[in-house]
Image (cartoon, rainbow over all chains, first blue to last red; front, side):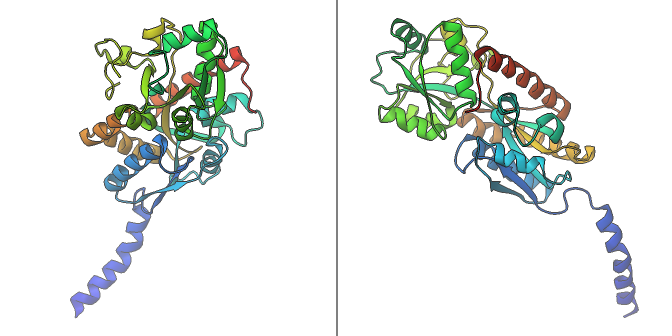
Length: 238
Length: 96
């Protein structure tokens, strides 16, 4: 009996001390994903959240907060308490593009956000329907140089990374293509499949299933990736 | 990229070496998150990104781990944002 009383007394003393010293994280962490479930960003977040829940012993709970080209979700992170119990995944648009083109943006990345870690480098791809006469992006540029505006390209939205990249490529090549913005990579791909646009500039994550089953052909890898990885180069075979 | 290893990049195919698209994702939190919390989170992410099964799941999605301590990634983001600002200014892109 005495032993039990002692144990209880000891526990009563020990618990508050333990709580105070309990290291981060000692409760669940909100993991804000500023896009709808299902795309490349969402999948990245889910894979990482699962691993972090396991290694840090607290659930990292995914919360999808899509809207306004990912700035709604990132604004929520920026305005949360800086205690590590709200984190978020940000892509290029929310911290590297939109702050440069929207002076009225509700947060300032440098002032309001801490970058904690990298997550993923996303390989882009440019795809078309198999019946597009051009087999490579170089040929597409040739065609559009001969006939400006004859090629339309779908992206995940105005001022998204794909839009920015294509503007740059058109400037470099002295060509003019027609931009058709969609609300995400998947609608842009659907528009290629239905013939509404000629090509889609999207993440490989979204396009890969269609490339692998032959409904789309890959024109080019939209990135400097091969050079970086030193992978042997050869001709297009997709 | 790993999933389509024979597919050349735009720079390789067209010769425009200045064209360097960068798409990435990073983990963010509110400014002034305690340094020890940043450290804990950064370590946990980097450990996860080093796991073979995660590298494999990433590769199948056309994703590659973006690894580095917080300072390195902050510098990477700052540099790319500056790079993108140059492109935005040169083409006169505005939010519509």
